[in-house]
Image 1 (cartoon, rainbow, N blue to C red):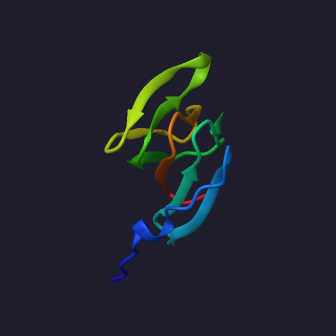
Image 2: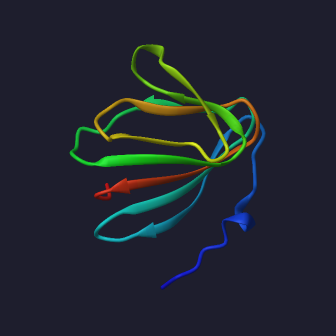
Length: 106
C-alpha cells in the first residue's frame, strides 16, 4: 500500500498547466496530478489506443472539453470518464486541480 498526500501538491503557475507529478505508474493504470491555473487549458487531444481515461476535479471549476468544441461544466467532485480514443481536455476558469487515471497505462 502507498499513501499520497495530494493536498501538498497545490502549486500553480500563472496562466499555465503544471503536470505536478506521476502519482502511480503500474502495469494496470497510471495516475497523474495536473494543476491548471485560472485561464489555462489542457488542450483537447486523443490517443490512438484502446483504454479509458478518467479526469477527477479535486479543486476548482472549469470545463471538460471534447470534440466539436463540446464543453461540459466541471467543478470539484466531478469526474469525466471516456474512452482514451475520444477527444478530451480541460479549461480552468479558476485554479483547478485534476487527478487523471489512464487504464491501461500509456
